[in-house]
Length: 273
Ligand SMILES: Cc1cc2nc3c(=O)[nH]c(=O)nc-3n(C[C@H](O)[C@H](O)[C@H](O)COP(=O)(O)OP(=O)(O)OC[C@H]3O[C@@H](n4cnc5c(N)ncnc54)[C@H](O)[C@@H]3O)c2cc1C
Ligand code: FES
Image 1 (cartoon, protein in one colour):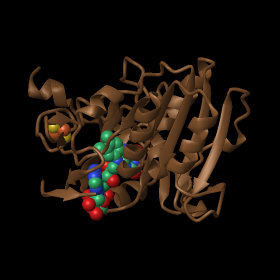
Image 2: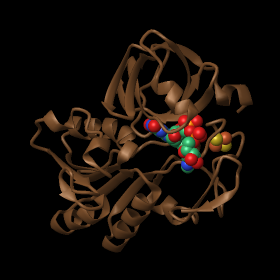
Image 3: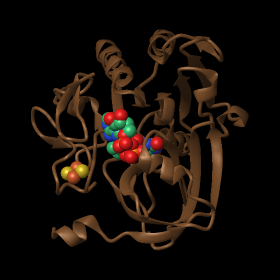
Image 4: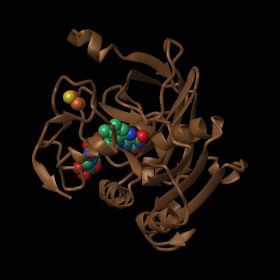
């Protein structure tokens, strides 16, 4: 495929709404009327913030033609993006990458921090298909929780559980220890996860030891978002997170040697977790 076709040109979108999920998390909605297909849970877009940067963002909501992204302000681009006002313009390329399989009948979904963003449309889709879902949302403290409208969702197939490191809301402790208890008490056929890599790596080990399938959405620095620049390559086989991921199945995670061990910073230098 030629470079231009692979990258695509940014489509200009006007921000329809901007909503605070908590102190440092903002959800922005916009329309993608040009998209001929549905966006699948786990896919991401490259968001161009005029005058600042272009960064990857998961789709956190999709009801054709309305899409949303949920932004955690950590640096220049994300702060600039979260501060964009209703009516201002962004450029969107994509959607790109792999998606969650949605094949589970009884899923444990574990979202840590901003990792809940791509899991939100996944939970919505699974419930629409009358699958059973236990959603475990983890954060360091109550103030950092992102719960969207899951707290008020009434569906007999859906259970919401909360874990905070400091015990300020829900069960006290890491999401991984709560997940371990849940796995002992239930017969899940799949674990879906997105969040801090060490959390996902621990869940991967638990899933492996129990013989349960897992799909994890992995994050790496990205520049092109579509398989051209190599920035997002993971050692030792050089899988590209933007094309081969971001969602990796158990089998693919087995081959990601650096998963849960190391990553590359913005200069390309390898760093240990
Ligand atoms: C597929 C994918 C989907 C994503 N979805 C979301 C989303 O839905 N919501 C959201 O808020 N963010 C998401 N991100 C992360 C987001 O793209 C980065 O936070 C953003 O690019 C940081 O840009 P910045 O200029 O604000 O911060 P920077 O100035 O670039 O970074 C600030 C700090 O964060 C660290 N950092 C930034 N990006 C990464 C990274 N990829 N890996 C490790 N450390 C990093 C830097 O080391 C630095 O310490 C996603 C990333 C990927 C790859
Ligand atoms: S970001 Fe360029 S190859 Fe993945």
